[in-house]
Structures are given as structure tokens and as C-alpha cells.
Length: 314
Ligand SMILES: NC(=O)c1ccc[n+]([C@@H]2O[C@H](COP(=O)([O-])OP(=O)(O)OC[C@H]3O[C@@H](n4cnc5c(N)ncnc54)[C@H](OP(=O)(O)O)[C@@H]3O)[C@@H](O)[C@H]2O)c1
Image 1 (cartoon, rainbow, N blue to C red):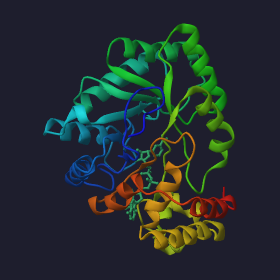
Image 2 (image 1 turned 45 degrees about the horizontal axis):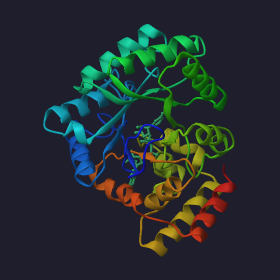
Image 3 (image 1 turned 90 degrees about the horizontal axis):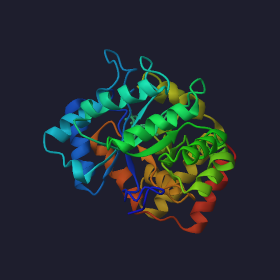
């Protein structure tokens, strides 16, 4: 299994996203998804304090609670690498020292565990001095509550600043980046973040690996997306160039007897610095296509064709 940056953690090359838990997947279905994922070798689970606050009746923390309930009911904590995040929750925004300490304690309680394997700053907080934020994350590491620090949605410049501050303070450095990156959204990551990831051995764990489901090929028109839980996220992809990417995915998929989703994630997994794409499912039956990406290798020619189709979009 690949190693996540400088962390030494061996992670399955596909991380299970959990923003569907108690949103589009019921608690029982979420537990079936976790069982199936781990039974088939998956060990890397991505969550956040904010999941899934946007679902009617939710207040955030639901996905962490679902995972905690699963762990308490017999899920093997030692076999699972749990990554969670803070600063994206509307009721607990920002990265002040107090918010970080309180946020970690809340997440640990919901997850029913004594440590977080990877703890992400979910979104940057330019209003808090980075020295305060970096030192607060480091205190969690020193207390044994957090194993590794990581960053999501940070600009390349701010990642570099964080690395510099950590070095100056002798604090735990970040080990991973979680950017928005897939066949339809490439430029910001490839031009700016990837060089920083390479420079500092940051393992990249991209989110929206399936562009919210568009790269499965199941959306053919605005009508297909209308009224679905993710419909609002799909709209931007419904362009000629977006559909050209899907057509190329389908062509490669039929050559390999695979699903388009599998090919999309295999393309992502093969990108320099990427360790494990993240993707989620709303039903356990969707998981096969995701898991297959962990072992699917595209030929250089297939890889090139997909990149060329994607150049017109991203
Ligand atoms: N750091 C951040 O700021 C950030 C932001 C967003 C997400 N994330 C993380 O990344 C994860 C992945 O993002 P995401 O879940 O929003 O999007 P995604 O992985 O790009 O798309 C997942 C969705 O595609 C559909 N799908 C998956 N497999 C399928 C299959 N085999 N056949 C048909 N449809 C399928 C499902 O939705 P439907 O069944 O509803 O169509 C599923 O929920 C999240 O769960 C979260 O952990 C992080």
C-alpha cells in the first residue's frame, strides 16, 4: 500500500468519503458501506466535523457519529486510518487555538476513539496568526490525540507558510494535502499545489474524485441531475467538453471491461504526488466500481487520451 507523505501510514489507494453518511446514505447503509470497504482491504476513511450539516434536520457531526457507532459495534479501530477535519463547520469556524482544541475533543468523542490519525485544517483562516494555529495542532500531537497534521483547500503560498512556521516552531509538519482535483478540475492543483507537495513530500488525497458522480457517466442532461441530492453540483459539468471527457472514459472503460468511475479514479491515482483519491457512495452496491480503481492500471496511451480530453475542460 502507498505511504501517505512523510507520515509512515500505509493507506489503501482509495479513501472512502463519508459526506453521504446520514445524508444520502442511512445509518444502516453507511455501516454496510464501512463493512464492505474494510472487508475488501480498504483502511482509509475521510470525514469532517461539518458532515453533513447541509442535510435537512442535521447539525453537523453526523458522519463522525456514524463512524463512531460502527467502531463501537465492532469495527476494528486498529485497522482503520481515520482522517477528519475542522474549521468548515458554520457553528465552529476558524482556526484559533481554542477552536482547534475544542474541535478535536468533539470529534474524538463522536468518533469514540482516543486519537485521530490525520487531522486536517479544512479551510484556511487568514484572520488567525498561523503561529497560533500551527502551535495548537502541535499540542494535539504532543498530547497523543492527533497522529498527523494535514491541510485542505489551502493555496500553495499558505502551505509553504505553514511548513515554514512549523519548522521555525519545531512543530509537527503537515503530511498531506486534500485539494479539489479530478479530470474536470486540474489547473490550480497541477500548476500551484503539486510543486509544493513534491517539495515537502506531502501525500495528496484529492476530493471530488468522481466530480460528484458526473464521471460515472450517469448524467446525460440537466434533466438527469434535476431533483437529485447532488443536482446543484452537477450543473457546471454539463457542457460539450464535460461530455467529451465522459465519452473518453467510457471508451477506455469498455477496452478494460471496467466502469467509467473506476477509470476516472485510476487516472487520478496515477497522477504524481497523488496517494489515494477520495470518493463516496450512497449505496453499498456503488462500492465495487470504486474499489476496482485501486488495482486498475491504465496504459500510457489510455492515460494520454483521457488527459487530452480533459485539457479542453480544466
Ligand atoms: N476537503 C474538502 O473540502 C472536501 C470537499 C468535498 C468532499 N470532500 C471529501 O471527498 C469525498 C468525496 O466527495 P463527494 O462524495 O462529495 O463526491 P464524489 O466522490 O466525487 O462523488 C460521489 C458520489 O457519486 C455517486 N457515485 C459514486 N459511485 C457511484 C457508482 N458506482 N455509480 C453511480 N454513482 C456513483 C454517489 O452519489 P449519488 O448516488 O447521490 O449520485 C456518490 O455519493 C467526500 O465524501 C468527503 O469525504 C472533501
